[in-house]
Length: 472
Image (cartoon, rainbow, N blue to C red; front, side, top):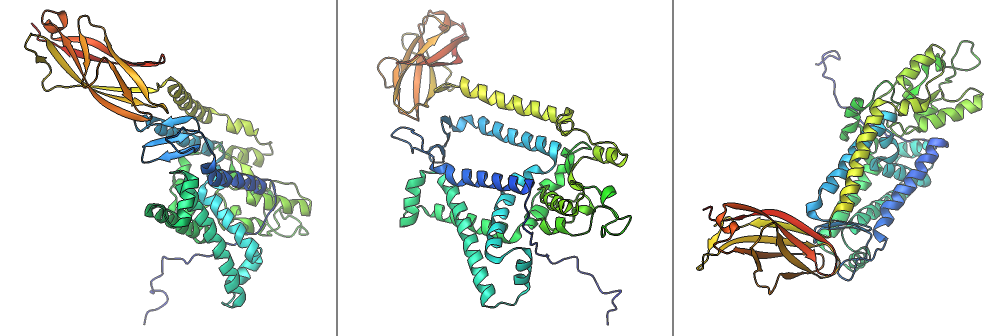
């Protein structure tokens, strides 16, 4: 028989469900406004119309996988311009570093999709089942008619939220009204139905059931955020030198904390901020609202729990006032992040305005590098790819500069003009020919420049290349 001292202990701890209590206050209102803004933008953005001509869907934000392009209002990004997407990702990373350095995990607490959808699911749960105590009672209650009815209503609403989430996502990849009609009539592509099903299931599970477990166990950011923070970073903390010892206010010597557990009961992560900063804390500020409400009721100063930096803790313990918020926000690290973030953004804007409506790619044919014709003329061959990024067909003239005595001829075309369809590419072959006694034919290599210009406008681009001769 195994004794209690030798019996192996399980390393697994069953999850304790978290039932956050409803709270009112500044940070809760901020979260409501941000949630409404972000969810509204996500669900409604695919339905914003934007005239893109007869060949493309009139959609303001569109990721056209078939055409390999991304549209954002008046901006059009082509596959070879992926550096714009890379730049935006770099800006997003620098922005995350900046906000974390200034105010801790504000992204996690206010803007992370997991937080936003979890807030929405909890709101629905509170509407259906009641506030914290009612939900705890229902959770412990045996399965009867009341529990089945309330769970069925709640899960149905969660499923509809997940369905709307998955549906909104696929609308970003094609014309939203057309896809909606096809989805309803059963004519949409199976990939659309599969994507919606997967996103519906993940939204239902992550927002409804997993909740804080995603933040604690699945998300890597809590484990690397410490590298972004320092002693001047503002984060949520409990002023234990003011609150301890906890207890009734009628007892002399007790601190301001009456151990009411309000801060714990409203926390969506189920932690006690009075135990210090923890990996699970997402700095959402709801514990601040709950504590301030209680301090108002007992007539004590607010901010027993509040945004606080380590340097402020030292100052407050010694009786000095905390630093100004702006001194925490604007310091060397945050200024550096802001400068880098701004530099990338300005670079992207400049590149966006400097890009041309024509793209040109020139590839000299190397096998052979040149051909000698019967009359001694030296011919070089080039493969040219032209991309017309305008919404209508255009004629483009190809010419050569930088060398005298070289004639240009386009394969299969009369003259030096080619037509490129709207939003399409054209590959063509160009021949440059130099007479046998000309300088380019006698030289080994001659630098030149190929030009492409719009026949009805002043748009033109060029590409530098070389003409290979006999080298005699």
